[in-house]
Length: 159
Image (cartoon, rainbow, N blue to C red; front, side):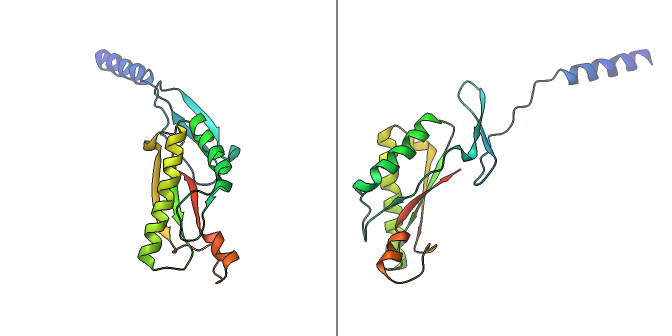
């Protein structure tokens, strides 16, 4: 009986000394904070609302990055370079003109051109995922240029 008691006590003591369980890598689309580990297993807390990614807008029927959008891209890229644990999904969007397949392809090309800029700036390509929604998720649904221009963009979404 004493042996059983001793073994039980030893087991409980050893169980109490087990290694600390580290929190999982988590990101939230809105609110809260992002916890992540770097290669040395150090943990950080990044306030989620400390940085707001800006969308990058495009011209009609084009995936070329406009000169007016370079500042936005540099700002977003610098944040990603400075915060190696942050990963993003680049969502490509188009206005309603053109076929569904064409707009999906154009949205993909827009997201790819933003990704190429980020990679050239120094962001690891493995931290970037791209997707195209084409004309599926319109920001503005009216049929005139000032509305269409609001639908031609790439949105940054933190994973």
